[in-house]
Image (tube, rainbow, N blue to C red; front, side, top):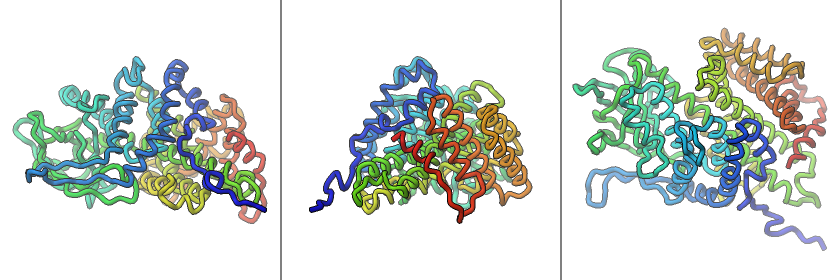
Length: 552
């Protein structure tokens, strides 16, 4: 008599899996993109974090998602003292991210995780990529703290840097002050020229901000960068960048209130709210007429972080789907042995690995740009909107397909799939919707001269190999040039550039690891995402699928 599988055989559960050690490319990609001494130093940290992702951290993320923060307007004595109450699980994750791993500090100062100097972007994003496989929401405050520190160092006065940077980059929870970005208003989301919050000069050299910000994540942060209009100055040139501390130098709270918290689809662990500014004290950052341009520095850093987080979520979604497919038996076979399932898994792994390759390529460009390399600066300028545009869109589909692999169990909140799917929709909205970011790709190409730099970079990855991808690169360039005169082509052009770049990166990685599976992924990018397709034609990608799935 046939006995149907029960328990773990019927409902595979990845709890307590180490998501770093089960990742077939985790160690290999870190070794490829990190300096050898740093790679060796970080390996124990990767392995420990991978265990947390499948264990304690994952449990905390689920608990914090079920118990979102609560805003209290008064204390129990009736005093008008606002505070946000966070679930203990969220506070534990906060300690892990800001203190144990020092994500917000590691690019700015030495000593984090015992490393004697500030770490390159590839190290920070490799660790972030792993952490976010459990928790997406918290990584928004982490990124904003890191990005605020970066922007303050670049544009802030020496006095402001000395006063506020140490608290932003602290790994001590008592002295740490988290960062935020208050930019969005009801009538000014992506259209910054509509900013209505007013900044008025004060006699002591500071400014007073009045008005409302509509969507502010991490609203109780220790400090925020805020866009505000100087009096009646019109247009973008009238919008300046200000540093808004939660506490004034004398220890009193600044004059702004959290009106309410948002009830969000995803990232429910982390608070987002509305802010009312009632003459709040703020300090001008950088040039008065360049507020938007300077804020764009923080926005671009956040866009890159969104792409990194989307890549990490796709990796977790794929890991869950593969774990189930390897263990669940139906019709006498494991799911992973079935042709349609193998194709479905490969189509999930493909965009996930494209995003991982783009993550490391962009991180490398950031490190070189920060060292003064002008070509790398232009490359970073176009790679950033590319990964934000495409990886964040791909994450929504990959998360949905992973839920389907788990079936009905994937649709319930007992497993991580539902949370991954909800959180995956964030990346395409925050720091610019898909249309806005696709147009920013064109802006980088036209105003920054980034297109030929990107083309030279992709050609360098390919060398004399892959004439098919060299041809795709030429066509992607031509499409982008056409889009400069016809913005309706912006999304198509951005996708073409992204797919060409990632196909080249996968080819380059495949030759250096060496790894036939990444070369197979490069071919699949060309076949499925760049080459013309006849939907009625038969296509056999079995060889490439077998090469990819052999890694798992």
